[in-house]
Every structure is written in structure tokens, then in C-alpha cells.
Image (cartoon, rainbow, N blue to C red; front, top):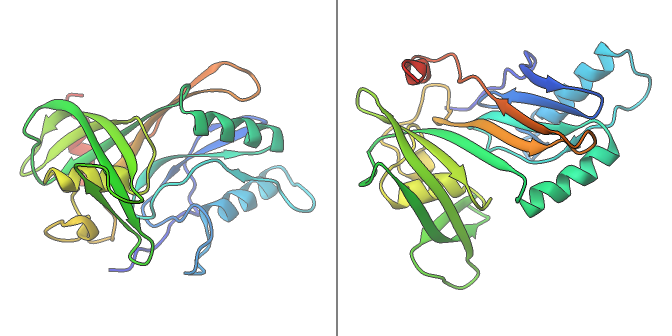
Length: 234
């Protein structure tokens, strides 16, 4: 089923003179692509222009991206200074902590651990493959995970990204047969009705590019039965 975007109803998690942080919904594309669909970046620009009655073009820098069927935290820079500094921080990764929640069809063999693979990317299929050993044109991918909760027929994992590769979480979990619910591309049994996958950028911690203070953001999970069940008792 084709994903439809409802990005007009922005859920703003944080905003100041330098940053605006959005809780992305499934179906939103962060930047424009070949689909021609209106990207989240343009929706946020329009919001800022209207809110502050800004004349002319609004500056908005894309700091990082999330896959279209994924939900959760996306950071935009409202100034060029903030953008350049955040780009440097996200590239270095030492001051950035990214935490995801994933609902999977199977439980990993250990309730917590680390995964290390070598990923190759197929740009035509927009898909990555996780290999146990280094192969030609592969990039090292590392994440830590722990089982947070057992649900009816599914499992909630918390994941901390150590590296940031294309479709890293999706491909690495698929490689250990812990496929994300709804992720047909990586082997899920069936799709979700809205075309989403159950992968959510839950938390982000970083140093503010101008104020130099630590910022910690938590994104509420989507208003959906299975996601809501994840919050009970956590």
C-alpha cells in the first residue's frame, strides 16, 4: 500500500532560534525525492514562514534523515551556523546518542548484545545487505540492543546506533531473523495497513550547536495500538 503523508499536522518536540525538532510520521519524506511528494523540510519551512510572518525565503537545513516508513525524531537547523556545527557533530558521532525502538517478529537469541556486520548497498533496489565478514565495497555497521518488552506475538527492542549506515537497523535485525514488523523489504510476513514499519527514532541526545548545552529529546510513539502497548509498564 502506498504511504500517505500527514505531515501538515506537525508535532514539534523542540524549537529555539537555531533548531526545530519534529516527531516525523510514517509517510513523511525528509527531503524531496523522485516521487515529487511534498517533503517534511518544505512543510516545516511553510510553518515557520506563517508562524513568524517571515518575508522571502526561509532558511532550513536538513541535519539528518529517517527512512520514509520510519517515525520519530528529525532535527532541522534554522540558521547556517547551527547547520554547519550540527553537521560536524553528526559526522563525528562522539557527542551524539541515537536510540531507536523496534518491534520485531522474533526475539533475538540473547536479551541484549551488540551486532556487527559489513553492509553493502544496492542503490537500484534502495536496500542494504548485512554480511558477517568484510566484503568488497562494504561498510562496518555496529549497534547495541536490548529486549525491553515481550508483546503478544511481537518483541520490543531498544537499539543504540554506534554507526550510521543506510538501512542499518533494518538490515542488521533482518540478518539475525528479528525482522521489523511491516518491513516487507527486509522479509516481514506482511505489510502494515498504512505502509509504515515499526521502527521509531525514540531518543536523541546531543550538544546544542550554539548554546553548548546538552539537549535530550524523546519522541512519543505513534498513536497506534501496538505502539501504545509498548509504553505500558515502561
